Amino acid sequence: MDFKDYYAALGVGESASPEEIKKAYRKLARKYHPDVSTEADADDRFKDIGEAYEVLKDPEKRAEYDQLRAYRDRGGEFTPPPGWESSSGFAGGGYTEADARQFSDFFESIFGRAGGFGAGSGYQTRRRGEDVHARLALFLEEAYHGCDKQVRFTVHEVDDQGRLRARQKTLNVKVPAGLREGQHMRLKGQGSPGQAGGEPGDLFIEISLAPHPMFSVEGRDVLVTVPVTPWEAALGGSITVPTVGGRVSVKVPRGSSSGHKLRLKGKGLPGKHPGDQIVVLQVVMPEQHSDEAEALYQQLAKAEKAFNPRERMGV
Image (cartoon, rainbow, N blue to C red; front, side):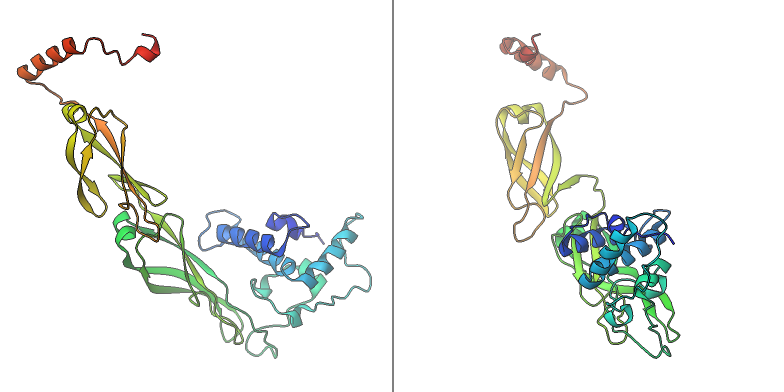
C-alpha cells in the first residue's frame, strides 16, 4: 500500500500550525473544487486535499499519523505496525470537510471506516455541510451602485439511501455597492446542507469585474484617460470628464503634458474609505489644421524656438 504524505498534499511543513493548515486547505480546495476547476486531475486532487485536512486538522489523528510517518521512514512498503489500532476512532471522532465514502484505503487502514452515515446505516455522525465557492461577474457600474443578482452553484447532499448527490441551487443575492475585484461575499448557511442535524456550510462568492471600454480599476481607484487639445493643455481651463457616477468638471493646470494626472477625491468605488478617480491627460492633435492655425503654429515655433523637449536626450 502506498503511503500518503498529507503534509505534501497541502503543501505545508511538518511543523505547520493549525492556522497554516486550515489556510492551505481552503486555498487548495478553492483551486481544485470540481465545480470550478479546469485542472484535469481536479477530482483526485480535491479528494486528496480533503483527506489530508481531515487528518491534520485533528490533533489526535495528526499525532497518530506522525507516529506512522516516522515508522514509514524506516523504509519499505507501508503497512501499519503489528497490533496497530487507532485510538482516535474515526467513527467516533466525527468529520467535517471530506466525504467518508471517498477516503483512501490508506486512511481506512489507519483510522478504520466511518461506520456509515446514511439512512439505515444504524449510526449517523453529525456533520457540518461543506462550504461552497462560486464566482460572480459584475459590470463596473453594478459594482459602483450595488445591484441584485442571481447566483447558480452546486451543493452536495446525502439522499435517503446515504448516497452523495449534487444539486443545482439558485439564489437571489443583494450585492452591496463598492465590491472590488477578488473580494468575497460570505452568505452564512447557504452552502451544502449538514448531515444528522449538522449545520449547513456557507457560500463564498468571489467578485470579478468585467473589462470596461473606458475605465480601469486599481483596488478602489478608477482610472480614465481623457484627451485634451494642445491649447487646453497649454492655457489650462475647465473641462468635463466622465466618472462612473456621472460627469464632473475639472480644472486642467496651465502647461499640462500627456500623462499628467488629476485626482478626483472620493470618485472611485464607494466604501468605508472610498477610492478616487484618476484622470490621465492625453494631449491630442487635430487630424487637419486650417491655414490660420498653420500660421499660428509658425508664429509659436518662432516665439518658442529656444525650447528643446529632447534636450535631456542629448539631441
